[in-house]
Length: 107
Length: 336
Image (cartoon, rainbow over all chains, first blue to last red; front, side, top):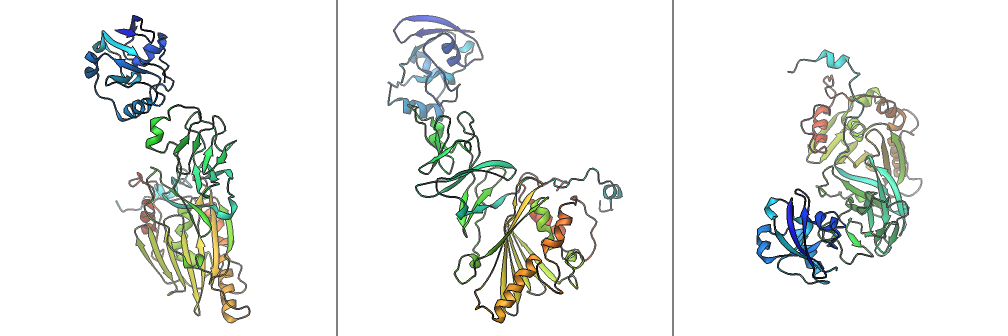
């Protein structure tokens, strides 16, 4: 279990408990944050885009090719930041306890 | 090691009729004229169902796995051709003949994987000699050789080929093995003697010569063989292109042709007779063609991986070793 600090699309903030071993996307989806995760984690829908707090971004490791391609394509519709990630590519564990992120706008 | 295993010879219950997987190679699907522009058709070959279609823009042919990569609808039930693409009826996703997803009509963003690679399995297709050919490889590798040139099917100097088609209840390895089984030509077909023959195995090809040039054979992979019968300077050609439907049912397809000779000439009569001899329709004292005698063997035999052979049997084992190259991953199998 990891506590995740969320900035929602309307600017409000809250904390959720994300179960370890799940994709972060699943926890965000189940908490009705606006994250949809339609494709289930295969980087083919782009509906789980989040902005990671820059202080955390480097700790999560690099994006892989598919994630990068999706973020590039999303860039036509929404702002992409250096700390943009697809939350389906982040695995929940104790190591991300206290992670801070912002839900990106819908494409 | 080389002692005959009597138990293996006598206990045949565990022998299989067709222990072989579908081999690597180019295989005939249908004649080009039988697939119209815009047509979609389900076909069963190579031990599975496929969807065959021809584009409307450039007429390209595709042979695809039946099930849409999106949500699994059968592309050959309700699917239609749009331009050169096959469109799934379920959500109108479109795929080209090489299996690339070309259109998802409602997605803002095409899934990135669709930009990287084909997502629908298709077989490489080639149209040649008025036929549709596909390349099959169990591990989906790209073609390892090209279809050869067959002048008799490419030039106007030859008569329109006669064609024949036969179902045979065995694997194509078993069918083509008779091509190097020279002794059976005397006993099954009734040749006066076991014909003198030579065989050369070379990569994916086999070259045979029977009766000192009377029959020259050229096998190209498992799915194509060309036999040229030569008599008094007249050559008649048989092109054989068998395709596995299932592991135990194959379709034998053949085209017969020869040079155009004026009607009534000696050459025309010889050519006609040679063609009849190939199929087994020749009158008189000729040996029997394959149609009348080989099927009873093919349809009922079992495959012996360790046959009891004798001198005079021809290069059966070399042939089997040659054929193994078409079963990737089974090089060490003792079943085939």
